[in-house]
Length: 314
Image 1 (cartoon, rainbow, N blue to C red):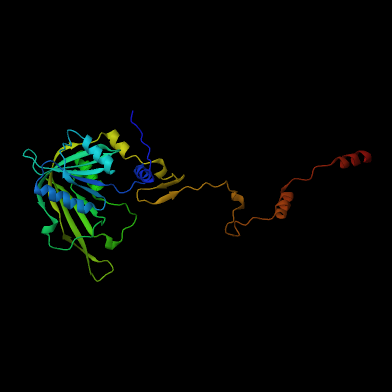
Image 2: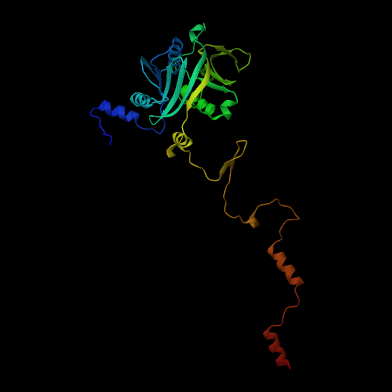
């Protein structure tokens, strides 16, 4: 049995309350971890990705002897300690040179891990131009059929979205689309490019957009993968009942997004329905109908008084 330790100070209570599950989760924190042996390229990649993720990032300064695909306990401990659900681990060896392991955790347990090899890297400092503001929410663009057809690339796309999307917002102003991240899957390689959007004058209300590469620029190759089962992945994507939109009765949407509604009404008396007044359709009054019936009916039947008067006369 696990021993439950109650907080003794107000600071400890606030810390535990902040880590409790929430209906609307905050922005995920990412950990950047250096392995026991790393190359200069891997160290620069970790630092520059950390800059892209700030302020929701934790950079580990010390080296850590980890093997994520063989033992995940150390990663899960770091996740629980730093309250982080994303990580990027960098290492370098003769067997796997310039190696990156990107992954995410669910309930502080490993969910997905994908190992990527760096074939080419160009630092952002090699681009002599203005950079984007720190903390800017990027626009993510994915190109390539493999991101939609193959399971491993589908999970990698989902992992990239989790890693770089930043805070969830309802509206974005045009000037806020400053940072663009492009992910392309071509011939078994993943190309990552970073651009800065420039709004130029076009003579109309809509500005002309130009893209200027600002770095970092990477060419990656997928190596090993550790993917969650469909059941576990479905559990991780489950939405709480309180956040699910309430279903509205008698309302449906067609293929084009048009909303259709069904209205229930009481039965109507069509005899009292007001129509256009025309002579041909005009109804005659009750008196005219009664007179017409009298004219068309046979002679009036004899009454009992008339029969009695006939007998007296006889």
